[in-house]
Amino acid sequence: MIDTNQRVQLNSFSGAGRTRRMVIPSRMIWSVLLLLFLMTPTNGRGLPPYLLITVLSVPFVLRRFKLSLNKEYGFLIYYALVYVSSLFIHYYSGSIILSISFIAYFVLSPVIVTRTIKTKRDFNSIISVIVVLFSVYSILGIFEAISGVNVFDLIFGRSGSALWAGVGITRYGMNLSYGFLRIMHNNATLMCMIWAIAAYQLCNAKRHRLFWTCCWLLIGAYDIVMMSRMVIFTAPILQLIIFRKRGSQWLSKRLFVIIVVALVIIGITGSDVFSSIFNVIGGLIAPIIDEFFGTSLKAYFDSSLGGSGQRLILWNWIIDAVKGNALFGKGLTDVWSTTISGKNYLGQTWYTEKTSIEVHWLYTLYRMGIFGLSGFIVFQIGVLLKTWKAKVQVFEETVSFQFVMKWIAVFYFIHLFGIAAAEELNFFYFLFAIYMCYVTICNNSESSPKAG
Image (tube, rainbow, N blue to C red):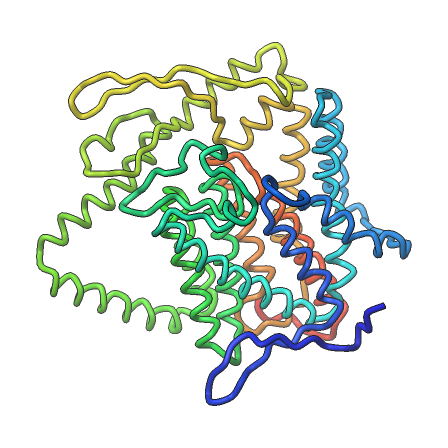
């Protein structure tokens, strides 16, 4: 057995003339392995990650682990029962596999987390590991955005073109990077969460601030170069909320430097840059408006961002499609489709077949009906209540993890009105389990409230 009093030292970075090490408790190896399995593609060569997580959880299950959930966490049980029940109400050949997968990510993953994150040092260690691992992931992602080569496709034998229709498309010269996930938009949403965690680490770092700043910059750069329209706007806003909590004077100094540098660059490059900036901003905003309202504003800008989701119209389409099957939905194998049309800047009409449901609420409603949707709504409400209303004796002096987690939850649920959840939801389960450990650690210590 592993001695939990021992420590594992990992060479992570150097500076000031000496090697610096990131020290983590040895029992945290389990959580680190879990994190690596979460970052494993769900398709391609090798064992599916949910099977790896199931095997990893065996020692904790055999040791008679008891998952104590009081009535405050009843929303988790309700969500789990509704989700699994929906899989068998619409039973098909993949129902059992999907059930095992859900149990691995939603039940067994938190079991591993809660058994390995026991102290403040454990918590700080897992946050550091997340930031470091995803900094490396960001380097691979930026390489993919520039070159179009997905390292995970090469290692796991995946065919990128079989994952989603956006493979090979570029926006402002950048390839749409999907990393270990299947869709770029979900990857961008995941990295929005990770960037917020990196901001938390940077705000609370008392040592090695240069290293954590570099990690924060890498993760932020990757999140932006993915060119996900929604995340390009929401991720910086989330960052401003976090750093505003760090202190207005601290934030204002850095914003002043950024603005001065930007003005100098514009002055050097000449007035023509304003026209380019206008086209870039218009090219970002117009497709978002087009997606929600079905307009064709993007035709007036030199934009390569595209966009034809038409989110508001989608609500009418899906609600009409599930009439007669509203309670339990159309099933897990039924494919929805409709023909949409529009006009380009020449006035020519185009037609295309739309099969994607980019709003997670509508995606769940179509597949599992009001019954299945109720489970996810209860889960969302429960998470928001536990992050916004819970009384936590936080130990941080400026920005608490509770503060960051509640805003991560808000922005993630907002993103789900623009995407259908995929692997990033599994990471959110993992992150919420860490938050539950954080609450327990804080409230069982002698810390006093400082940074709510």
